[in-house]
Amino acid sequence: MAVLVLGCGHCGIPASIASPPIEPDTRVAWHPRLCQEVPDDLFKQPESPEAVLLLAGRDPEGASQLAEAAMQAGVHPLQLRVLVAGRAFSDDSALWVHIRAAAARLRAVGPMEGAPVREANRFRGHVPRRFFLNPSRRFREPLPRSDPARCRRGCNLCARACPTGAISGEFAPRVDPWKCTSCAACLPACPTGAIDHPALSCPPIQVEARELADAPALSLLLGCSGALDSLVARGLSLDPEQWRVLEVPSMACLGPVEVLALLEDGFARLVALTEGECCPPGGRGIQVAQACLEALGYRGRLIGWDLQVVPEAPMLARSPSLEPLPAGSGRLPERAAVLSPGPLKFPLPGRGAGLVCIAEGRCTACRLCAERCPTGALQAGDPASEAVRLSFDHAACDGCGLCAEVCPEKALTVSYGVDTAAVGRRRALKEDRWVLCSACGSRVAPAAMVAQVAARLRSPVTLDLCPNCKPRRAFDLLRP
Image 1 (cartoon, one colour):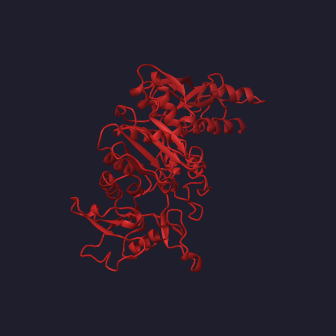
Image 2 (cartoon, rainbow, N blue to C red):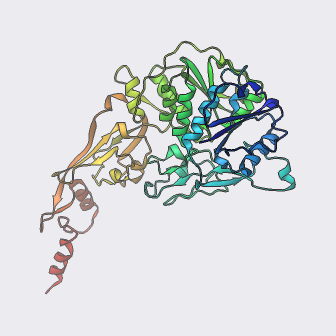
Image 3 (cartoon, one colour):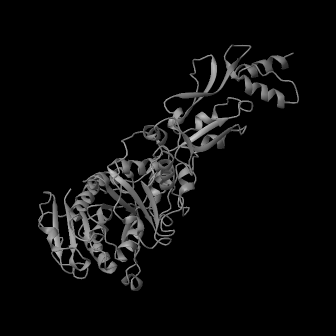
């Protein structure tokens, strides 16, 4: 993929960015006032760029004009990236690290032709002044899409996570482009990965993070475009030997597993930057990951920084010498088991891992919870077995709570938490026997369910007949 890097001297980008060796498919164009004067031949090169990396932003009006010029030259709107890191450091020593990492993320996203988009009149939160004279929706933002083949009917977890009510709670969920803000809070909320978008998903973000981890004991400043722009506008100056900057759609786009994966990529600590309600409050991946790390003894690895609460930057001092987290895999309980020195059980402030308890006296072994579980954490017994068995695998549970909602007897409860001793084994929650049909010998229902139905009925009725034999018995009774 051919990438064009645009550097603006007026925005603080040095002309020296054009001199270091670059990848064969990367071209650099620097201009002293690029955000105010777009050269006519900027995009008229022998090879048209497929993606543009814009090192500008001090003048939002000029940056929006550059974005429009790139789109008019044929660059897909979702292959246009503004790199704030160029203005966040005291010198340009770390600039090329961020350029290569951002280009790697653009390549990981891949071609965007056919990807769903929504119209927008804002560019990085700014509405150009000229739009007030000629109202227009010239820009495009990614619009999450749902895959019906992977969607669980009636789950509605993505709709609950959406802070603007843009997702309809139906099968398959539909996204209202007029309400969507492309925050990607719906992506980590979906346990089956049914709702997604290549420009919003975590794998390209993790590709960029791995490229940024080019030295030991680095700290990562993580933020959305609004928070990073606000911080840079205040004159922030980061030490290039200590820090790297990574932009995400919003803090809500990352689940706790994705947050831990960033620390496993080689960073000593992570600072999650927000500014008031700039990011959806429904995204709790940062808080859950932070609580998990503190419970496991890894304090100070993950820090939340709200610019409205703490305008200054006390945590940007030189970080202590910390080793990266050991590489893990799987869901949060499995990663916690790798980090834990021994058996440990602790609560979490939000969804990420779940602990399921069952009131055995109220459970009828109807198995609706297992049918509803999207991750396979709850499973019914082998259909060939003579017993009814409901089992739970803590390592596979993310605490979505769908099982508790569907339980007709309210016998099942789900709490947010991790129990490292339960990882690696499946625990039996309920065992019962099958009631067999007195006529044909086939299965009717679990014994607990039959007993409960019999207790609720006011008139005696035969409950040991299967659905096929029951009408035959009724017909025999009515026949003279």
